[in-house]
Length: 172
DNA sequence: AGGCCGATCCTCT
DNA sequence: GAGGATCGGCCTA
Image (cartoon, rainbow, N blue to C red; front, side, top):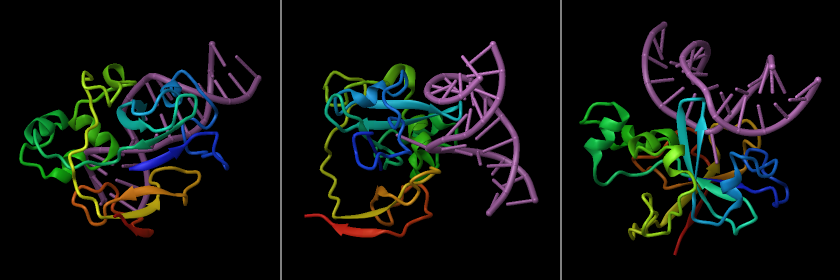
């Protein structure tokens, strides 16, 4: 995951969509926490974030990768890649995982991920994360060395193998 | 009204 | 490792 900070932070995060204040696209970021912010990138892909700050402030995490546990064949079909593809090919990358889960801006932007009636929900599956590596974010052209990317070291499904240098922290 | 460009992915070398 | 696809959104005039 990667964090993108709202303009209330000092210094403000110039890589964030919320940098210049609310716009029609970024209004979800200024809403309540725990909601999906999905945007179109390069005219053909989507990326999904989870809003994190209280209503009125912006701040989110971009989900860059996930480990698929079930429905792998369906994800492969959604991605239009061979059914026997490895997990990494399915969901390693912010737009790949949106393809795999068939997430799009029209249907999923703004959904409350903590509402048990939502079509898309965020739940704790109890996965034991014991070590997190903090690195620079990927694919941006400003604030390129801010330590705001959080990864599980050496995980099979990591996106962007590059820039794996950073500070390691142990949880618990 | 027009122009620029991106929190990417895939293909080809 | 480099380059093209592709278009909505945001800025400037």
